[in-house]
Length: 347
Ligand SMILES: Cc1cc2nc3c(=O)[nH]c(=O)nc-3n(C[C@H](O)[C@H](O)[C@H](O)COP(=O)(O)OP(=O)(O)OC[C@H]3O[C@@H](n4cnc5c(N)ncnc54)[C@H](O)[C@@H]3O)c2cc1C
Image 1 (cartoon, rainbow, N blue to C red):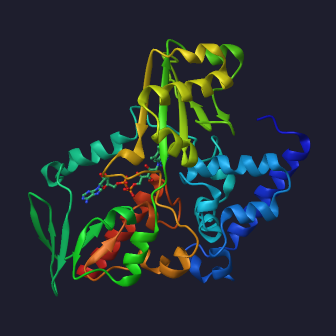
Image 2 (cartoon, rainbow, N blue to C red):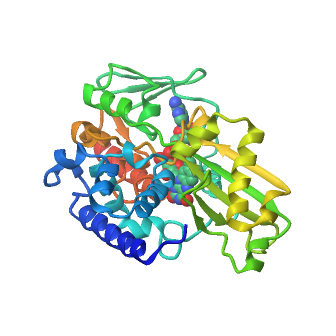
Image 3 (cartoon, protein in one colour):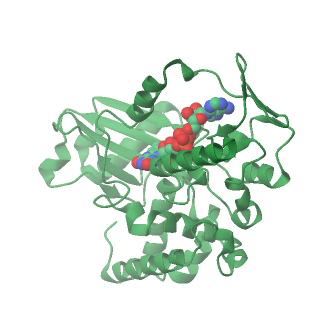
């Protein structure tokens, strides 16, 4: 939406205040932040209500939430929101393209990282082999899948907490760790691509990047290849909009998202040559995305269990990162931290 000057000022002061709040959050142990239980009992929506004065900016602040967490401001703990912003070095770094989270794209797609690492590891990587049960004895841990059985001195589980909850542990995990697994839902985020013969929006001087409060795709990007052909528009559909799309047929989803693209980029957006919608919440082994988030009360009640090893089981995954939580960067950092823990334990 076009922002009136007053709304622009309001957005600026709200972002300044949120960054100031985030800087006060303890990055490594947010539950130790001053008045942590107070801000963890509040939602981000309540903070918006108190700190934002115009209706337009209140609505606008919900837009990045839908994509950053796949959740509405009403679903997020304020303390958790602050910790997440702190971990990225400020709200602008989460939102921005230059010098921000959206600055770079992988030529060939981000799954190349996993594919290349898997090539190096060879047959040590087992696909189609989900872990169903983890048993711990005094000095060994046994990891069972429907087809395999691994015995180790330590194991690292790199899953979002709600997916950890689907694994059976013997002995059971601590009450605190179980609470964490059960009380962190996955965000709901879908990713849509519409492919056109060319990036026609550039002819009209448009970048293809949009923030919209009318959806269903509330954030869009031009994801055409460097050659400029074909033209590709990417739209993120998150939280309430993803819930609404989940109830539609494939044809209705396509129509609803393309109608939104037409409002933003004109009638040529209505007829793409190709169309792909990736419905992450429908993926059994992801359960949603981009991250498992924390509603009020979870960080102060059970946050300590995020990285605390459970006996011989160590925890990794982007949710456990203290920098760039929710991002690939955080996932890699968490893997390095967990590997160091295991090496130190085996010394
Ligand atoms: C639409 C969307 C857009 C995103 N955009 C960005 C972006 O622009 N930049 C960015 O940095 N991040 C982005 N992310 C977030 C990024 O994908 C995550 O931060 C990252 O994948 C987290 O890595 P991870 O290793 O912690 O967990 P995951 O990538 O979730 O890996 C967990 C793995 O465990 C597997 N698994 C599940 N259950 C079991 C089981 N029982 N046994 C064995 N394996 C199991 C899963 O199949 C999965 O492969 C996006 C996410 C989504 C959904």
